[in-house]
Image 1 (spheres, helix red, strand yellow):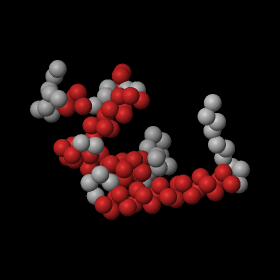
Image 2 (tube, rainbow, N blue to C red):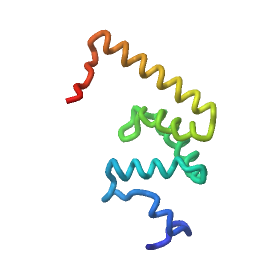
Image 3 (cartoon, rainbow, N blue to C red):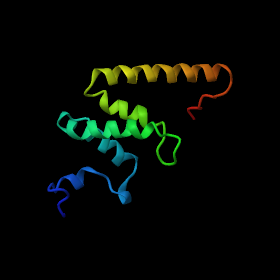
Image 4 (cartoon, helix red, strand yellow):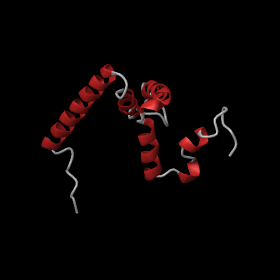
Length: 109
């Protein structure tokens, strides 16, 4: 394997476009949760939040903000608090929409 930025293992840590599926993404995010990956987790979290602020543009979106906060919440208590606040607001919004018939629950069939 060719070295990437002086680190041969760095290429193994990221899924490539050809083999990216739900399982590989889950494994990749689990790798990010390890304490020794803080050097990678913090810049990715900040980039996701900044990208989410321009969510009206194509490709990037507002979905990036909670994802970035979730990554930063592992290292910073303030981000964890903001993440919990967003979760509460989203749940309250879903309950509100269901009560008014705007959303239906999925069947577990």
